[in-house]
Length: 203
Image 1: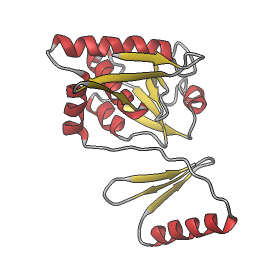
Image 2 (image 1 turned 60 degrees about the vertical axis):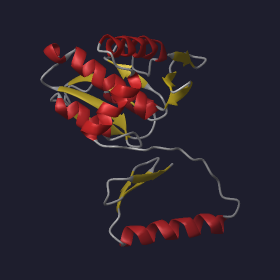
Image 3 (image 1 turned 120 degrees about the vertical axis):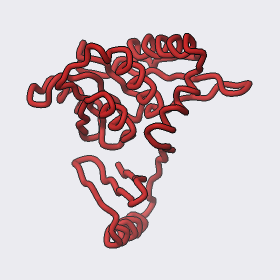
């Protein structure tokens, strides 16, 4: 594996062998692998009221992984600070893990923020556990897709030079909504949910 944290150690990036080269995992892919690994590792001791948290722009495949082990999923607005604020909520139950698509991950509640150092250790553990079974993390990833559904995620950043461009874009999205596309609005994002279970999120 190639593992690296950012400057303040709250995010961890990971590259896995793929063919003759290495391929980076995005935040959603990392979260899927770690959730699956940790839930399987802890399955004999999982709290009956356990739950995970994810931001509303993060992969929904984690919901299915958590549900397979009897855990609920709650969503928060975009930003790990919202996960940190919600992880100690007795009304929800016992916090297990939280993740966001931009690379933040937290297992248990030793801190109220994402932890890149612990994530690096957990990724190394997950890779070692896979190797003990004669598998790679890439093979583990493919197995998760086969079980919970395939997903492709990408992040694109763009701006508008003219206000009219922004208005034209919003007009198009409004037309989609009239065609039956479901829209979820929060304080920081607008998410469009399409019938074939894909989604587009604007921040």
